Length: 150
Image (tube, rainbow, N blue to C red):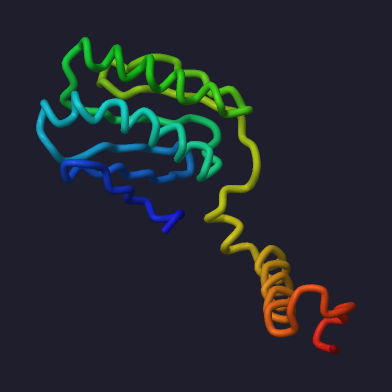
């Protein structure tokens, strides 16, 4: 679920995060103008959270349609405040002529979706699952663990 491109929001709206070769796109869809004006705080917090969770790097384009100018300014302020917690220090460059909010960040860790498709990472996770299963079946502090030998 953490890697799902769709994140449900209140009032039937949805938040979509997708990566292309050139950039990450975030699209907020559903609901009417009044709903988006009211959802702008949730969208700002969710966008900042998804940027960190999915280890987005490079160019991120946020499409937040149908906001009044005052609501858009307030949402940008909330987005900037929510992104201050990210140690990579995302920079909100502003709004494009097409109305997209442009954000840029340095590339950081490998995104979780890439880790899930990386063979060495999967082998390491399989080893950790084996250790966790052993610990669960023998109780905590059951003695030394020699992979598969108890």
